[in-house]
Length: 383
Image (tube, rainbow, N blue to C red; front, side):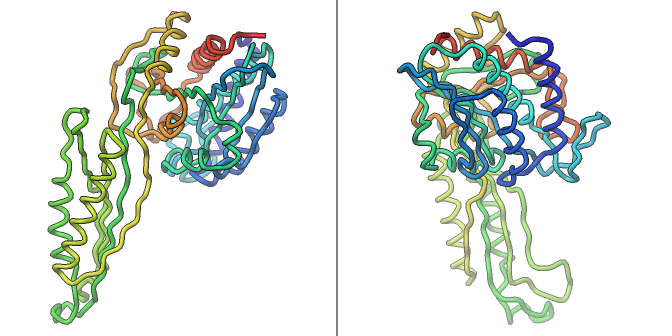
């Protein structure tokens, strides 16, 4: 159990992280802070530089058994925080407005509990993952050769979720978060004088067609296996002048499905539409994939383990608000492990994630730590 002293120190730790957010792929200082705090817990191993700036701490019982991984995220968001809190972000234009500072603190709290009372068998891995917000971090971690020695049998994560009662946990067997990706379409022709547009090759007609066609690729609906959602997020053509007929345009579209294979098919359909339009209007076309997230799908057995832990702790839980259209970078850890994501309520009227006034509720620290520890004890026992 965490002591009052633990909670005071953990809240201070969380608020210090909150003041120094770093964006995806830039988490150098955050990783150093995590390593320094982990060293005080004397884990059997600390691995750094995983998939970029990822950090893993390993608590090894020395007795054969499963490896259980618990994940948190290192990165913040490129959003200016608007808050009068004493621990408001000190970095202009950046903020921990998704609660990753709190998620890191949950893992640090778990580390304290495991360090004091080791597990009876197997290993606990605390995984501090980089670059969650752009969807690149989990893949990079799993692809890192150093992760091979840490490959978990089980993987769990908690994400705070406003809109649910404080301390309520939403989880289910199956889909939790949709797969999604951003697709950038760049169309290139040739500029001309606005008085003689026939001397150039404008992307205007191609853009007009693609706006309608891309929108029709997916209109949402029920979150079943046929769900498709295409969201145009940005369109730019030429320069903001009146004397130049444009020679270049960029369209950004976010594609969303409930299955990874369906996302691949949807992305290919979008590319085909752009290629057809480019060919008809004499343009060159290039593509870039951005913010690619795999679907997060809870394993049935891992979900049952988590539900048993919640029941033992008398924590209210259910499938409220699930599945979610929003994406999460945890799903990759479930490709080779039994995994489950849990959504921990931040309050029904709490500021939404990614809002400029969001701040992780410190009251969730002991609740999240207790959930993680109970899962670890149920799977690995205690020394």
